[in-house]
Length: 194
Image (cartoon, rainbow, N blue to C red):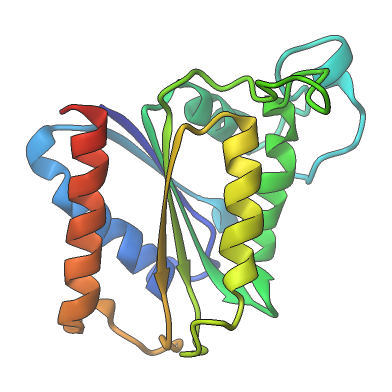
């Protein structure tokens, strides 16, 4: 199983990054091949709207720090994208990645019943952490990005949303969170038939 782990937090030890690491620890026994990318340490641009991925290429033609990450997403069995909620949405680093995922759409994605270019069977764990403990706050973030991820070709999407965690939280201390992470990890492995 090839896993690409993408940390969209500017804090390498932040809540969403910690949750992603805990998730990966659950898979250690299934000997996955894991590559982790911290978006905050990469230099990249957002989507340039050049439309080359729809006219002259089947990939994003922008060459920068995100090029390898986009290729790793394309070739992975499981992708983990972890982001905190900042100002009502994913982090700017994560949003830049998601915008560049436009290259995974087919040229005729608006009318094509299979709009995404990603290979069937690809799985995504979407980790989102937020300080606000209200489950209604920012629930639209999961909804809108799940729809996008499904349209670009992810077959199975596992939202892992953690509420009420502030900048100084330690997710490892929360038994309920640990159980949620373990259950998500087990579901991904079961669905992947590993």
